Amino acid sequence: MNQAERLDRTFAVLSDSTRRAMLARLEREEALSVSELARPHAIKLPAIMKHLDVLADAGLITRAKSGRTVTVRLQPKPMREAMEWLRRYERFWNTSLDRLTLLAEAREAEARKAGR
Amino acid sequence: MTSVTLVRRIKARPSIVFEALIRAEDIAQWWGPDAGPVLISQVDARIGGRFKIRFRLLDGSEHESTGIFLEIDAPHRVRMSWRWTVGGADPGESELSFALRAIPEGTELTLTHALLHDEKSKISHEGGWSGALDKLVAMLER
Image (cartoon, rainbow over all chains, first blue to last red; front, top):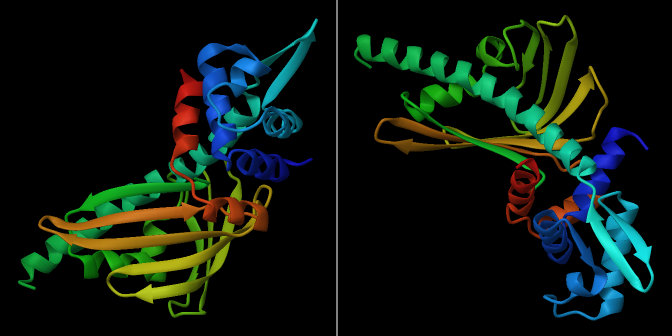
C-alpha cells in the first residue's frame, strides 16, 4: 500500500464518531479491555467488535488476548502520518499567504498614495 | 476534516487581494512553501479555465500543480480543483478555495484546501467532520 492509500484508509476510519471517541479514550487511558471500551457507547458489543476490527485493520490499534480479556491499545503511527501530511499543506499555504499578504498590502499602499 | 483552513487579515481592500489571487504574474510572486522560484505560472481565470503553476524548492526539487477554476465570484470567492502533476506522489484530486470578506482594516481571507482524494473520503467528508481529527491529533501529540 502506498502513502496515499494509507492516508485514505486512516481518514476513512476516522470518519466515524464512535471510532474517534474510542481512539480518544485509548489515548487518554493507554490500555482498555473491550468491555471497558464499549461501556460509554449505546451500541451492542458486536457493533463495537466491528469497529475494533476496522481500527485494527487500519493499524490504529492493537489487540492482545490474555485469558478471557482482550486488551486494546492505541498505535499512533498512522495518525502521525496523517497529521504530518496535513502539516505539509499547512506549511505550504502559510508561507504562500505571508507573501500574498505583503504583495496585497504594498498594492493597497500604492493605491492610497495615488489617491484611489 | 481532511482539510487545511487558514485565515488571514490583510490590510488591503478585497478587490486588490482578489486580483493577486488570480493573476499569473502575481501568483508567481507569492506561490510556494519556501523562497524558491516559481518557474511557470499560467492562469486562465474563468470558470472552466485551467491554471498550471510550477515551482522549485530551495532543495532543488520541482513541483507542479494544475487544476480548473470551478467558481469565480470577484471579489468574494474563487474555487478550483487541484492536482499535483510533478514532484512526489500524486494523492489525487483536491479542492482549493479562497473566501474574501471586507473588514474595517481591509480583507479577511479564508483559505481552505480540502484534501478529498477519493470517493470514499468524499463520502466521509460529507458525513461531517467536526474538527475531531484536529483534537485527536493534538492529543496524540502531547
